[in-house]
Image (cartoon, rainbow, N blue to C red; front, side, top):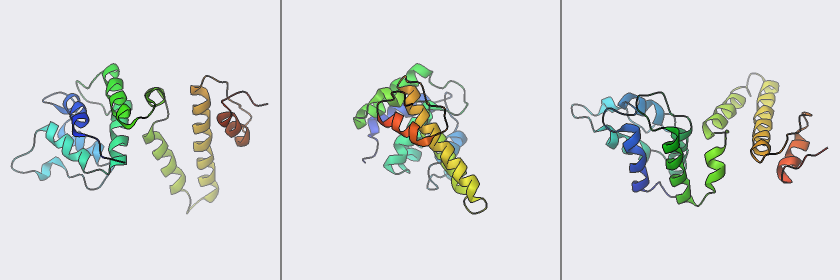
Length: 181
């Protein structure tokens, strides 16, 4: 995967961090540091701090390409609270621009309720339980799989099987979401 082209990064950086609008330097650090420990706090740049737009770009390019896409997607879908962020319509246009560059079907990405951040958090929950409670880890992993399958089925407009049978849900997701009975 290639890194996000600079022209696309700039389209994100300006509305999310220019001037007094968008995220503060500390918020940018808090957000991007979730994706890599290579991101440096803005305070490191002393006595001359970069403009927030430049800091946004630098933080993003500290991430490997796959996480660049994940971070920008998450920023559009679940932005941190901040004054004067882009509205939802603008965030969806940015998201479509990002993913159209990849050649990915933007409809699913734009409208899916299952974000990469939610998926990662659920995965970390399951993983963190392995050592102390393997049965709780299995339950958390099963819940993650069930949620993912139900999201796929629901977003295709079909009625999900609520029997609790993962095999039926998987079959339903794989066979075009027709009701399996």
